[in-house]
Length: 278
Image 1: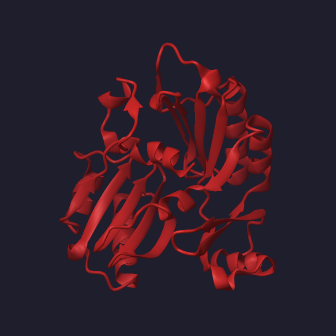
Image 2: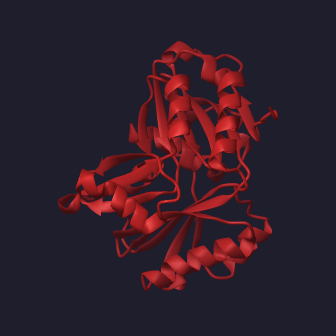
C-alpha cells in the first residue's frame, strides 16, 4: 500500500490527550485532524490532502492506511467529533422534509451512479435540513477508527454560523475542490462544493454562483479560507473579478500552539471554526 504523508503536521511536544478533544474533517479532499485542549488551546493540526483523481475505493484505502499509522488516531480523548465533507448535500425546508423522499431528491440533483448512506442534520437558524449521502465503505472505516465520535456534515456547521448583512461569498479552498456559500442581502442562498483542476475552474465557479443568484461580483465580500496563497496565480486570478476580499482570521476565543501561528491564519481558520459547532 502506498505510504500516505501529511502536508501539514504541527503538534505541540506535550499533549494531554485524555482531557483533549479531537476534531476530524473527512471527505474526498482528504482528512484533517485537530486537537483542542481543556484550556481552549489548539495544540495540533495534521492535514492529509488527497488527489482529485482518487475514486471512493482508492480514498478508502488511503483512509485505512492513515487510521492505521496516524498517531493522533491511536489516542484516547475526552470527546471526538467527525465532520463529513462529501459533496452530495442539499438543503431542504423543514416543511418539505420527508425521509422517504431523501434518496429521490439526492438522485435528482446528483444522479444515482453513487449510492451510500443517507443522513440529515437540522439547521435551526434557518429551519432547514441538510440532507447528504456518504460512501458506506468510508463510514465503516470511521466507525472502527473513531467509534465514539459525534458526526455531522461540514456544510451544516458553515450554514449555522451568523450571517452578516449584505452580500457575502464564503469560500474554502482545498487541494482539489472549492466549497462556496453565498449569502445575498443577509439570507442564505446556496452552499456547494466544486471540483477543480485549473485556476480558471475556481474563478468560473465563483462567478457562476453569483450569476445564478443575480449577485454582482463587485457587490460581494469574498471571504477566503483554506489552501490559497496571497502570492499565487490562483489568488491573482480571483482578484481580477472580486475586489472586496477578506482572508479569514483564526477564530477568537481560542489559544493556538505557537507553531500554528507561523502559517497564514486562513490556511486553517475553517477547520478551527468547527469547534464552535459542538
